[in-house]
Length: 304
Ligand SMILES: [Zn+2]
Image (tube, rainbow, N blue to C red; front, side, top):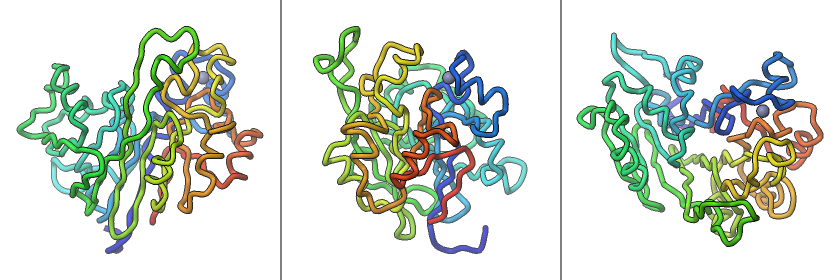
């Protein structure tokens, strides 16, 4: 305890998108800078935050494959009572990609906690036998549905928010082979009258998205790519950001434009290693900061 009876604390466990920064097989300019220890960039693990309303019990949003390392790096998540204990009381799942669920596997040491997830994601866990390492008698699974608040550990009220997901095939550019329409999710966590939203994936900033984000004190928002064709231009992939379900930070319809009038703190998170905002003195980073956005980093702590 830190002697505070009220407020909400959010801790960034990982700021990077899938693959992390640097990514193991990536030889791009930024990954090379990160490997060389250049002070203008910070290495980052894959996207996850932890939130608490009582400074004791934490709700982790996003179970990245780096979760073990993230717990090791953050003393707030270390055992505090007796031979077996963890302040990690709950995990919220928002997506079914490897970088969003694989972290559950490192929590397999017969430690009780609760997994909150939309039904399709709980089904995904059941269909993959490897997740049986989390004994349901010890690790409770709690389905959550959009817009229906549930009470969580840590004096937190959790609400699942539906977000625009990957675009339907008919809207995609040539070369796409699989249609992946449908929603993705964000999480709103409220405690002591303060609120934080974790939205690591959003394909398009609609009026509905703006409505969801409007009254939050702090928003961690999809900062995957600075420009929609960034991966293609750098020779790192074939897909645009929108094709992957991520609205670009810049340009028409991008995040800087679409979320320019949000009243709360706006922090870009889930940043791909190709994104030039990772470089502290880049023009793109200056553009983001001039627009009133912050760039998340591992270990960033915000007390609301
Ligand atoms: Zn790279």
